[in-house]
Amino acid sequence: MAIDIAVESPLQDEVRGLIAELNATLLELTPPEFCFHMTAEQMAEPETTVFIARDNGEAVACGALKRHEDGVGEVKRMYTRPPHRGKRIGADIVGRIEALAREEGITRLVLETGDRHPAAWAVYEGAGFSRCGPVLDYPDSQWSIFYEKNLSS
Image (cartoon, rainbow, N blue to C red; front, side, top):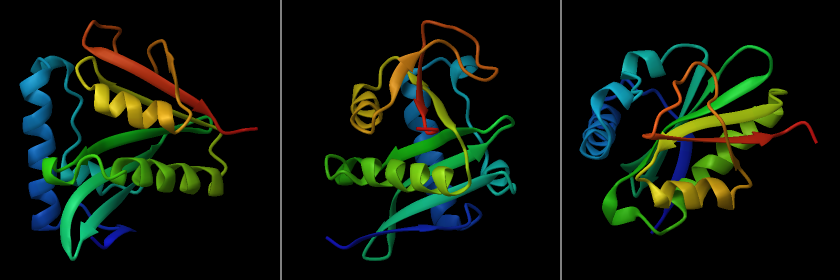
């Protein structure tokens, strides 16, 4: 297995397919009003950098860094296709997001994930994120779990 992770455009058909799978998966676990999707077009905006993991050329995972004001970066759109789970691809993408955030002087990373995503929690906690209260403009709900990581030290 040769996994390569690189910054790519989300506007590619193959990446749009990956995003569609992510959205469908989230909608199976969370009510639509508590799914905070970004379209491929939103992901292509300048404040967002998208990382795509490829296995021998096939897009198998994604994740993104969205920049906000006051030195805050948000981890978004994390997804790994089922046959590739358990291979630390998500952890590697989070590592790339954090490295870019640090390089750009972002001092805090935050994220919102679902209450039924224990595999995601393990990735974030393994990367040193801690649970916290609601971040950014997300509503506090039973469907959301929030994480943060201070990068200033």
